[in-house]
Length: 400
Image (tube, rainbow, N blue to C red):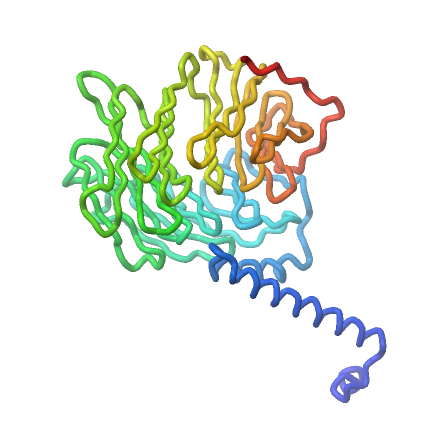
């Protein structure tokens, strides 16, 4: 009580005074940082708010990494706005840099799946009709599809708008785009002849790309449509006979990339098509980076022990490629790093192709990824930070 009276009178010790000044300076610097970030192009107020919440919620910390997880219940591990995001069969969880659980939201989706933007995730029930939009601290919106249609695939844009590809009773499939506040349908397209396989939204929030697939004369047949929300007719419609088009992505506002089972396609200015065939190689896996790079893993003659890591720039130029004589299990890309998990180790590349020192990987590792400058691996039962290998692996020489 006496101490409280002294504080109210302003009679504080020199040590207490110094501590109060330090706290005030830290809070002031944080507020200035948030103000500066809010002026940066592409930074949303939800991102700023998340950064503010993250500062205070992280005080106290968690148990650190390695962090135990129930792998039998994990559907996907990713990074969301500086936190590690885990999609479980029954909930979603965000962990901060100390492995502290920032939040946990339950769900009852039978087959949960997710799509991600820089600061939001769209969690949906594949084969069901429900979906939810979250950021790292809040559940922002929960909804259902029109007429209870089953969701095939979905995507979320940088602006926060979402695109749902669904099975339709009035057509083979339907594309529905919701605005970023989720109170209005911006665009609806009924596809009468094909099944939607993937969707993507442009960064400026004006366009949607959708890949569809069907059969013609007994052979696989795909198309990519690009739509401007202000018009019902497509900006472009590109055909790919004999190709299963697996995914589309906007590398920038004017370029769409389509990854197929036997070729990759770049639609420049949303319509000018450039195709690159895989030749004698087959597609093993692929990913997209947030800044527009497309990374493929190709197996030469279908061999898992002779694979090629290939990275394309936003406009379809080859950024770099690297041969491997070990099996590549997965590949993950952030804004500045590409993580390649092999059966023996983890390679990390700069986005331009500079290879950094390899990291250790356990035999049960499922995914390697980076969060900022820190490298992690997700193995059976645990997420942990990786360590550098003592003996660095040798890579085969690139073929001429």
